[in-house]
Image (tube, rainbow, N blue to C red):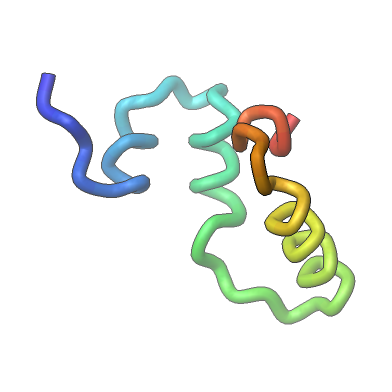
Length: 58
């Protein structure tokens, strides 16, 4: 199978219940207008260092 060229292409191949797909479809790339949501996203990004996204998203 050919390697995906982007994150979006990779998640299209995943099951709809996969955490990466849910995050992509509901959060990734959408503008943030709420300060609390922005803070939450920043904390996720900061704490991701060294961990897999599956661990962070769960």
